[in-house]
Image (cartoon, rainbow over the protein chains, first blue to last red):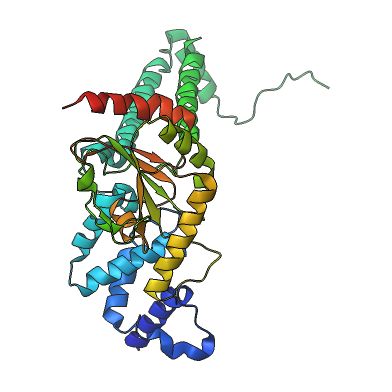
Amino acid sequence: MKRTLTQLAAALLLGPLLPVAPGHAAEATPMAANPQVEARLIAISEELRCLVCQNESLAGSRAELAEDLRREVRLQIEEGKSDTAIKDYLVARYGDFVLYRPPVKPTTWLLWYGPFVILAGAVLGLIAYLRRRARQSQPPALSATDRAAAEALLADDSGTPSRPKDAP
Amino acid sequence: MKRFLIPLGLFLVLVIFLAIGLNKDPHEVPSPLVGKPTPDFRLATLAEPDRQFSPTDMRGQVWLLNVWASWCVSCRAEHPLLVSFARQGGLPIVGLNYKEVRGDGGLDAKKLPLEEETALARQRANTWLRQHGDPYTLSVIDLDGRVGIDYGVYGVPETYLIDKKGIIRFKQIGPITPEALEKKILPLARQLASES
């Protein structure tokens, strides 16, 4: 079952590459002869950016260059190169930009850690702001007469606000 | 007053960042090959099928490697500039004819035997140079684009400025504009020519 799925995925991936009429499906076998190679090809190329249409992965792009690069990656898989070696091969030619997951290194520190720096700054700012507000909005201390007045009001347990008795 | 200045300042910072982002061309991916030696290759020249060219042949010279194809529309735009530049004796320009046949979207050349494809590429490229002028010291044929991959080509035209030691010093992505030639390529080439 899994094997069929991989083959199906490979066929979907390779389909656009092969100008084959539906009736001639057998012609596609040389390309997808090794499902393991195709599965690795898909796994690797999904992590890579197509440079022509930059929002597509190398696996999904129909651009000419993407076809060439997939062919190159397939060749290198067949030569037994590791995934990292293949990615390094493409990075050496096209730069870190081909990787959807940029590596952590000094030039990308700002990219990786920048958001956390901004978050930390925002949290510090918020704390400072809240502290200052708490200090400023402290209610003024109650004077002795105010307190007496308040207590008098509280002691009046009639519960209803007093009304002027002469009101119509 | 101060409480208005802070959001205004933040807004201006945002505007600056967005302005920089908007003015950058996302298709210009900086090449990791600048500062590195030219990837080596050995390809047949366009003019003489028996003659081969390798970048090491250009050691001791400052030169341009220009990636082109007859199907490439932007190459047509940049070509007159290259022709007049070559006529003034600017720098030697080597053409890398990139996927002349199979790169042409209007042509289904996938089933063409290699020899026929080579012959067709030669014929098409030579005709094109006859029509539009030939600024190249020589051109080589990269039929399947594998040399292009080694040079990190992802769009045609692209041009590399290479120094006397064979190090890539500058890459122009897309057509060379008169401005890029005057302000970037020529000053750098002059400086490289004075290096030993």
